[in-house]
Image 1 (spheres, helix red, strand yellow):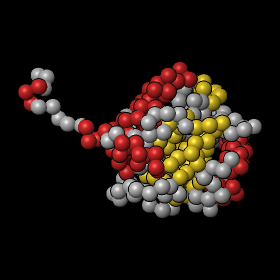
Image 2: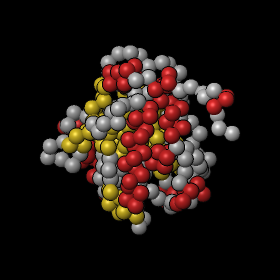
Image 3: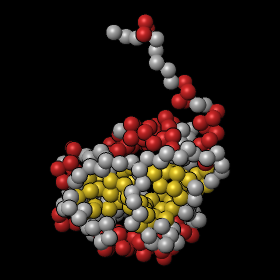
Image 4: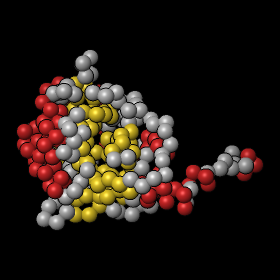
Length: 279
């Protein structure tokens, strides 16, 4: 596997590039990898037919958001990753998939893995903000690096679920990306938070936000999906694929350049004069 990408240092080039992203929202099931992989294969077939370049699958798509990592986590080169690799190669599609990973040193990490259209595992991201409410921090180790991937000359920062609540993670890499890809198992009970925060991340960073959530039931929780894509102005930009439950979004670097040039938010930020600061 190639070294894990960290924060990019090369400025975004002012040229037009485009990317079509498929939002792989579905009922991933619970602790049933064969069933989820079968559904994912069908979604990949539909994504390719719809002209997608990349397919996003939910967090821990093959197992559900499991805290039983000792039983269900696998190495990065384990059976689940090999199956996703085969699906990517079969459909000549980039696939970003969430997997519960067991590291060689025995640690567990909540991971997003990117597979190329040739089936190569080209990048990983390990979730940085663990969900203490579910004791995720007691089972999994947190990641320490950001990840930026480049597909068709479009750069995207990769994040996972609870990371969504921490705008500093997005702000840190925003100048270097055209989009954020976030995969999740976000429960229905806090769906209104998801709706607000996904849009906010697009608006405040002036780039695309593509967020994919699961549906169905898992571990006693209900999931309502709500997968969505917003453009750099916060307008929803995903659309339904005819005769399919799949949705796709078309991203263009032109929209990012225009938004940041016409309304340069970062240039408006100034420190208040000392005399006017609250004490």
